[in-house]
Image (cartoon, rainbow, N blue to C red; front, side, top):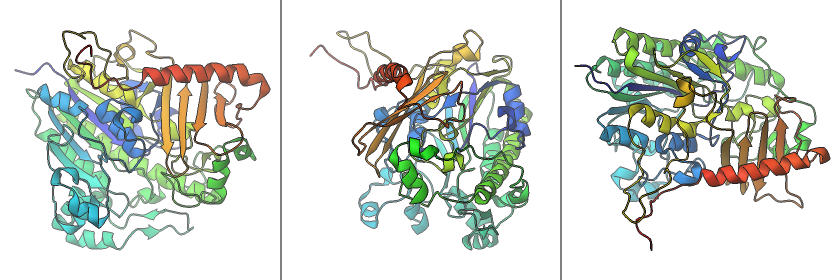
Length: 515
């Protein structure tokens, strides 16, 4: 007898902007499969990350907590095992849970001393151990995942299950891969061509193994499956023919205004002119317009390759007869500056290109087709999934003395928007970003009309920040922070930010007694 609980297929990319899809209004990039998914489901045009870095964003998806809550404030901090996770809650409710592709909840590397001291359960994603052959499989259960096939690293510097598969099944391709990417002729940074064919690329590998997993699923056993592509993350090195699919002359150019960096926090100019070290950026940002367009063209190629593989996965879901009872979610962990405002990659740059991500939900016959401006964030993903599955949010045991407890997860279920019962579920979202290299803590509030970012830990005589009016300035080219006629608005937004930060604070562990 078919089971009643729905399946979940989470298709995830790494470092993909919200506007890099045809269904998002990009007139150049070709993403027919993502466009089809959006046409058949609910496409959130205002979905945001809660931190614009890989590890904090992915930890939020797993735990339902803000970076303040799960403590992965920035890249390089491992997610502790003390927090209950969304996959774990699903597994305890009878779901088969799996991930194929990138996970990145733990550090890729440690010093040799730390590697030797770490117990086996604590080093499962360290590249050094894959290189040394000390592990050939991530131990499971892994943060609630019962089955894991991992891709580690990016471009040609890959390890994990993908690298082992390539070495064992196609050793000649592995030898070619070890030679490195074919450098792009213009010299654009981190740009080139993947040295082996598309069928051996990690994007194809993730899709192939996702399809294989789906082939083994049956209607009587619900599953939660993450299909997580490592691209379109830098380095920008798609395989042929995707490397030349787009001309640099046809891409949507980056947005910028002469002199705009002078109106921002001082480190923006330093990042542009000096290439200071940041959490998501290790090379100089100052590059030519031609090189920016090269990077965009190669990124478009990476996205179109992903789109092709997403289509294969969706086709297999249909062929298996599981599509009608499977919620498909398409998301990314964060975006990329892609030359906007003269900046590249990621870091403490709270602009839309970095903060806004794709978010599409499809459930045939249950969710209607719509493109909604309702504010959403990655923080809302876990409670929505558990809400749909009918699985309680893991909160810890209640007590007779303190039976009334606040929700342990600060996110909100998107179901009222997904099923058409409401136009929105919240009036704002919050983003946080602790930049250890600069000693800064950024806190951002996004509303339908405005965005404000405050900085703590800055060095200077006056506080600084950013404030933008989306209605008059959708490209965020004019910082209103210091304008005298905007000070009342700034004060009101900072008050809203304060309350929203308090509202999204962690509510675990639960109180067990009066004293």
